[in-house]
Length: 179
Image (tube, rainbow, N blue to C red; front, side, top):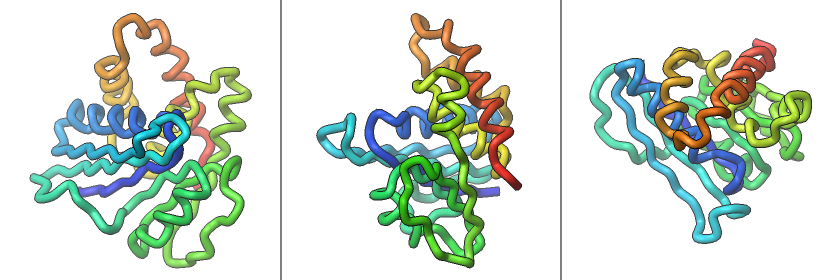
């Protein structure tokens, strides 16, 4: 198994932390992992993306030109990365901030109403965890238990009281995709 993933959006949407938590979860599940963030100098509000590779064998390079799965959080990222999803791959997006959806028919396109779910949960900061849950439903690459252990590892101890809220968001995300 080898999965090459891009998560892309604006800084402040939790793109980089979502990738980091996914990478830690891969480590917790004894997978080979790379995590490579990229963001503009403005960070919050600027473009941000992260590449995560999860594999059961050694990874030769973290640099990719195409992806098995893309999680897209804004139109700018859709315009940039939709063409880089491999034929047969998966593109996950939140319709809340995407106005022109891909017309490709050679990939699996899955809308996930993550922003709507964060309104229901009354927890805007859990947006990325809702999307991570949706990703795990569509591509069960790591266990929820490993994600929670990865989240605990990446979250500063002073924020560990937020672990239950984040787990609730992940579980809600698991329910959203129509697959």
